[in-house]
Image (tube, rainbow, N blue to C red; front, top):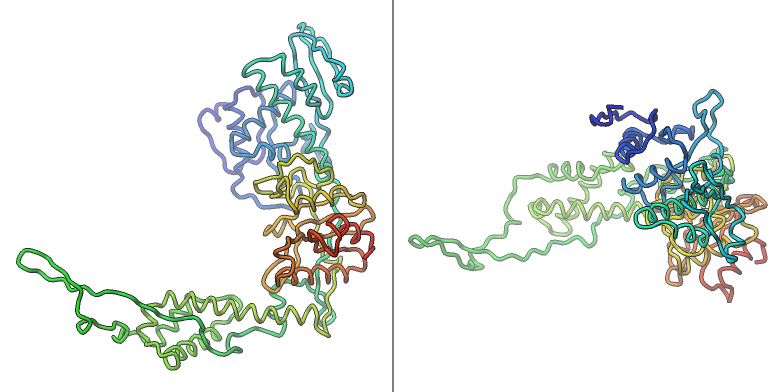
Length: 509
């Protein structure tokens, strides 16, 4: 117990127990700080290992949870994020038969009042989950199972004043938030159906299709397969030469006569072409191009710049960092051309053998949704989102309207606002230049899977959208009828988003 006061620290503490009642806010903060640090944490296959555990001795969970919640917010967590991370577990958490299943239901909210609360007729329909009992000390304990109606909450809050009133209001808010979290399918451990991944059949075997597949489809790619050139690279120097002199005790300067200035690019720097090529090779090393090929390419490129473009070797040495950036852009462009050619060949060539295969799948897992702020804060309450929070969705606009359509469709069991650039926590499809993270992924009641990408009017017909649409449709068409893909737009031949989603699900078009 004295360790907390002395600032004791252990970077490997993942489970912390307090054997005395926790009442001090400082002790709560110290306790959480120890188990939340987890400096060497990695995601584990066993879900129980992906959490930190704090065991508290407290007369009631509601009070302890409120303390934990308040301190988590103070420590930098978002208020809406806390309930999805803070769970109370079974008493025998580490027994022999331990398994992380659906958490127990949220305990009732308990508020003690000095007098018996009274309610009007307008509260009648909201009191079905509320009980009132007199305690031995003469106070009255109000208990609410599940969500406490806002009207009832306001009636109770009026019995308190000042800081105490604010504390009770926060207690009710956090209780309702925890109940909402427990309602989400992921918190109830409802499984999300596995999504097949695109695979390529090669020599009788299936392999996952990734962006690198398009690049190396016909063996290692080489920049030597393209004309040796560096278009757009040039040197434009504008400078003024000043001549500084001492006249007596005064230092003077003036602009030098052009006849007296020197072109530094004509001066021998002592650096050979081989020296420059070796330096460029160190700066431009890539995993997808061997060093031998890179050196040959750079040697031919430097020769092209000096012999055909007329640059002196000194000029290239003086601007070597600009030269590196220009070569990087050129290599990226050549790589993109090779990948795009492979993309077209794999997906749409006559010998293409690509399929969405259920031997290689991705599955949305409970507890694995590393959403970043801003979270959705709109007034509409989504009923079917798989996780308790939704990342980066505004409370209005075309993309929000699309999400509402998916949430309200009777055929949708649950859905996910897909994350971007978090490979372990999102569904993705390969493109020639990277990955495609669709906006929405839904599981239907009949077991099929629906992927929806929403595109605004400005973007619906550009090259990027066409490539994403082609990959998505191929994924769906090769899934054996178990997957659907929709590139949704505001209007399509007179159909709004709701009609597009419904037609995709029902197969009307």
